[in-house]
Image (cartoon, rainbow, N blue to C red; front, side):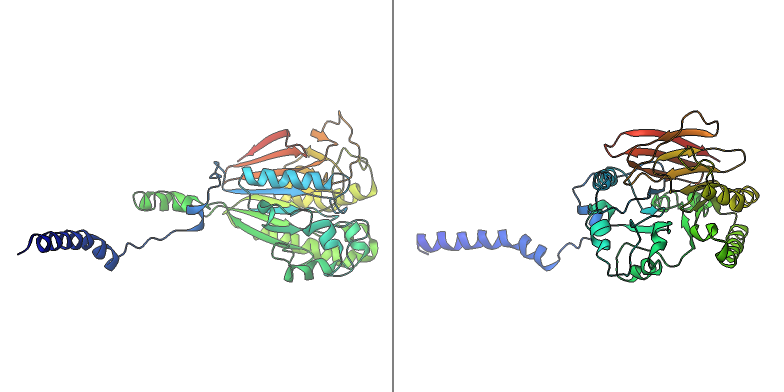
Length: 342
């Protein structure tokens, strides 16, 4: 054999040997299963609570009166903290609601304002008094157009699991122990239509709604750890409407039912401020109506634990034993924080 043939054959043998592992790998590829959260470079958002939401009210003013600034801060907060949905406590569109599901105000006051990626979640609204100046049912119909606006009826309820995330912990090693401790804890959210309560001509409608509220509360299972009712009009306030007809009417309508069924929280707007009120009885009231224009608050009233006439929103974090609430202004400052426990 000539020397050049020997060198050539040796080289080809070496090349062939080096290709074998690669060809084997090509013939038997490794299969991976990746979820979107496995690939994101965003920081992992996690805390000790299992349900999180923001609450905002009295906001729809085409971005003016610091509506846009509050929206930007909500987006930043949602990017840095867990958030499952947003609750709107009414007066969604000033000055007179929307006339249809194609009203330009949907874009000027909602879609083009709350643009942050973190706010592309479900929004659960109720009506305010200003929404009633036009076609309120257009806001229900918009649910079929919008990916995030979710308003199935004038009043409605949702039961939401408080076990989210826990079910995946130690699935193999602790499955048997975890099954005994897991439970089926839930939060019951009840969304009311409060403006008709202020009109005697709608007494039949409000009576029917109160029957529904009573029935919904009475049928709540033992799994329900927190009962949260959402409406536009407060039944206590330290804003301008302390002794106003609106406030006194809602107090007469709701206070006894809340006490009878041990409603934990009543969340409302109408007053353009941030408040935490604890009148006599079981229920705590939170007012989050500072989404745009502000009104004054009065300090020193005994049932008030916190009040601020500052633009902002509220953030709720909940599990089976704790309900944490923060009031956050448009600059991202936590003005107030409290925690209710079971």
